[in-house]
Length: 508
Image (cartoon, rainbow, N blue to C red; front, side):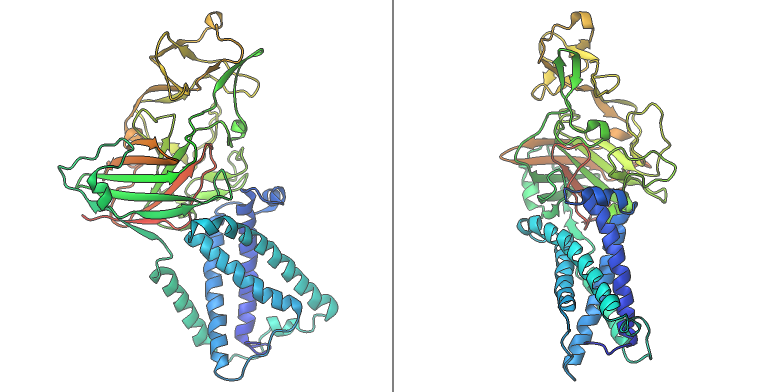
């Protein structure tokens, strides 16, 4: 035993461990509810809601301080009288399982090793359930078999003794490991670009300047293929006016299908497998999102709120997965590249996360704080007036000749004509695109240029944006700004993500 019975530090660590495990388990249940795990339906119905990522990672910092305190005490005791070995199978199992659980969480957070993350996630999930069972069994043993006579020694200190310095050293060491070791973020140095040197935004980063830019690779996970990690490589260049990003990630197939319309005996319908609940995972295009923020807080700088109803007084999340929004009125700048909707428009959808918007009676989907930047003209729209699972009525059909692109998954407005039932000669089994390109975004929503290419099992995306746009809905790109990336593998809302942000290092 490292600490004697009723030692005040032993009592404090027990109380901390109980509190931290409660927070870790409750918040972890909500994270697990978003994945393909056994008991998922139970976690969905019973887990707490809200900014659970921040709670989960915050409790991990507490575990770091507790672990260091125990480690330092063990080292200190080894210099004196050797501590007694833990008695009982349950205590031994706890002493073994808890370090494995903490280590797997650290590996998972840091994104160390793409090949191991696939099974580290499973270890972390099943380790949490094992700890729950062991703790419940340990408490039952103390109450039922031992009459609870040892519990006062765990929760009631008899006297204060040495240990305050040990606790302070542990907290200081934990802070040094966290911030001093760079656990709070990864740094991306934005390489300087001569003002006259040009970068062609074409999805092919073959200019010599890109080779000179040092890349950062972040490991994302828990996307559409929940158990597969996706490493995303990011490079950056900047001249005095513009910042350029080259982002690439593996994807075995380039997915351009986006809710295609199909002619049936009963009429037209949109092929889907979850679109009605904002969770399409089959008939959807590949995408990538970039988020910028002035802060690097947990949970995408506190913009991720999980659960079916995290916002009291607002509509429930149809997918049950939650919303993006901020609680202090600040803005997170979001750029959204979409392989079909905007792919050939050479512009990204410039959006933002802000305060939750009021519900709209006629809007097809409530998105809380996830809103587009103001737009003056242009954009895309779906090729129907109203989506119904029973069927849709197309808005447009192709004109004679060219007008449909990307393997017939999108159609230009001016390369099409108004749909009329009497002129519909499409045979049963025929198809129409569900995406109508209007024109390029004009205004704040069109501030980010971008184009991607898929080659040899990998997407290559090039982006460009002015350092300062002057918009209240954009984050200026300057030294110290934090960045997150999120690839979508043919999914509407399920994207892979990473907890530790990228911190941009930009020269004046």
